[in-house]
View 1: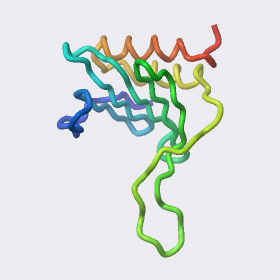
View 2: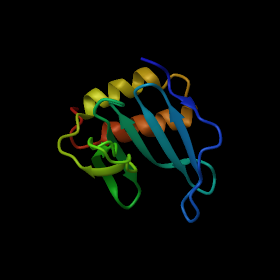
View 3: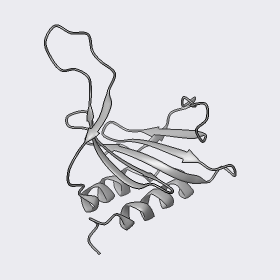
View 4: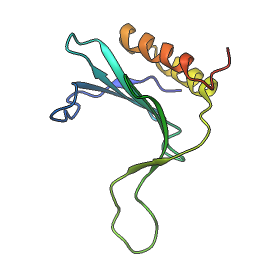
Amino acid sequence: MDALIEIPGARQVPGEPRRRWFASDSLDLIVWLDDSGAPAGFQLCYDKPRSERALTWKPGIGFLHNAVDDGEGGGFHYKRTPVLVEDGYFDANRVSELFAQASARLPREVADFVSVKLRQHPSHAR
């Protein structure tokens, strides 16, 4: 698996915490930072591009798991903007392993933060 590497110049959204973006061929990781620059939340997109899913964790909200509707839809329409839609079961063990394989080049505080949260997901086998 390809290592996650930082994409410089991640788009910042006014009113949201500062973010960093890391990507590989099969994963995307957005990390939101607190005022001190420490990780405070994340969105990990996996199984891209074939059947992309997104796991989001934010303080006060917890975990959300979604499928990514890529906006292709077929037919003779213009491509729409990708959106998150409800999705079912999250295989925390498999995604934890995918993340572990891809996280070697991440800053240690980012890798540790996401790894700990993945292990805290209710579907993660103890």
